[in-house]
Length: 202
Image (tube, rainbow, N blue to C red; front, side):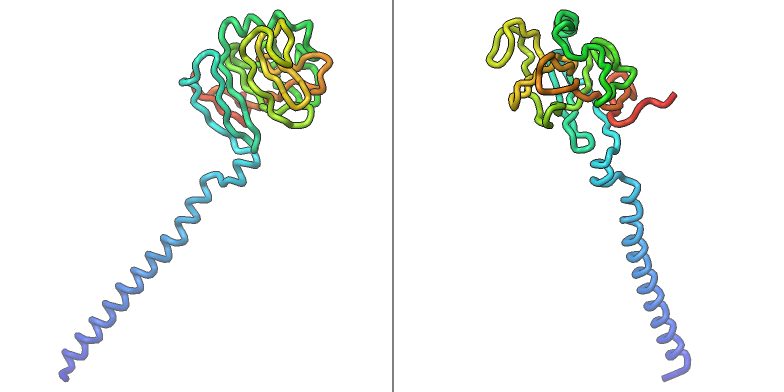
């Protein structure tokens, strides 16, 4: 075998080795990069711990409610009708804490009003009864119904022990639930997008 043939064989072996090494290095780099990039996304644990949830509410019609999850809790977003908003004033004498002054579940300043919300028509509340943690059911239709007073104006009923809440999540007097439903921190990113879990920075 000539010297030129030996050199050629060695060069081919080196080239093959370099290509293989580079290819393996590229695979290794990709394997490292994928989990590294994924760390920029909130994990399920981070979401459960309180990562904010963005919700587009443009499709919610007046009188409808949707439920999203934040910190493992059901958060209600309800778009109230003008009639439902007007009913909030009629029942204030029957409520245990109409002005959201109790401190067990502090209400954000922007929700310390009759409708307990930033925009009057949109209620955002945690759908967990403040008595024993059940989830109240929707009783939006006004009028007499089982387990509700004859002058019912619409709201929520916790069937477990009979606690009732108005359409702003305010608890009625003489019920097992000691407090109004919690209003989570939230703000509007735009006219139709809510961010639940954070408050707007000044």
